[in-house]
Amino acid sequence: MLQTNVLHLHLKKLNQKKNNSKIMTREILADYLQQNPAEIALEVGEHGKPFIKNNPLHFNVSHSGDYFLMGVTRESAVGVDIECARPNRDFLALAKRFFTPSEFAAIQSDKNPVAAFYRCWTRKEAFIKAAGLGLSFGLSNFEVDVSEDLGTQSCLLHSHNPLFSASDWILRSISSDHLEFSYFAAFATRGNVEPVFCC
Ligand SMILES: CC(C)(COP(=O)(O)OP(=O)(O)OC[C@H]1O[C@@H](n2cnc3c(N)ncnc32)[C@H](O)[C@@H]1OP(=O)(O)O)[C@@H](O)C(=O)NCCC(=O)NCCS
Image (cartoon, rainbow, N blue to C red):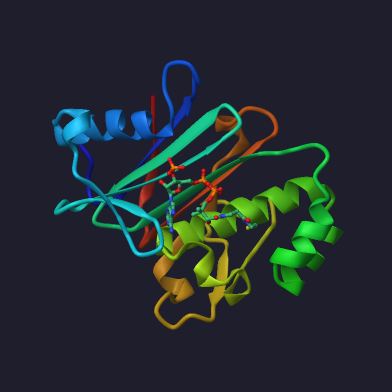
């Protein structure tokens, strides 16, 4: 049973031979909807965000390396992102190109700039995926806090898009306690919901 103020997070290891993100998505949704996975009516929004036709259940998925992450909520937009850190990535060049000057400066001065880069990346991706606009939101149109420990505080600092005011959203990283080493993940929801991990 999924209550309106709860976010279910499903973190699964993908077995490339047996399943993929699309199969996993339908299998998990089938449990909520009590429907045959193949019969779930999935549609795609203008910017590519999948949704269930005529149903108040919201979901979003992300996959990277061996892992698949899915967030499911009732009546609240949700976005998730998981990234497996790649060792040879020129992360400072990427940060300078994609992130805001303040985010870039915070990453550079962090005691672990690689971890700060991935926190920033996953937080920004989770928010644009929750908003449903993908990269068309404009990565410089909003700013996140890249600090490590923000507790239950939202790390969305401000948004320049009047339709997506920062105060309406909760954006948080998933604690490393739940993730394998070198993975980073975040979720965003419209309104405050309690994250609950599902097996
Ligand atoms: C497509 C995008 C939504 C996510 O891409 P991604 O990080 O490569 O992929 P993820 O694994 O996190 O997410 C993929 C899933 O997002 C979903 N998705 C696609 N478009 C979406 C959108 N507009 N909004 C929300 N979810 C979307 C789909 O379910 C997709 O699943 P599928 O691969 O099974 O079809 C988009 O944000 C993108 O192209 N990002 C590029 C990454 C980048 O350059 N980031 C810059 C640094 S922040």
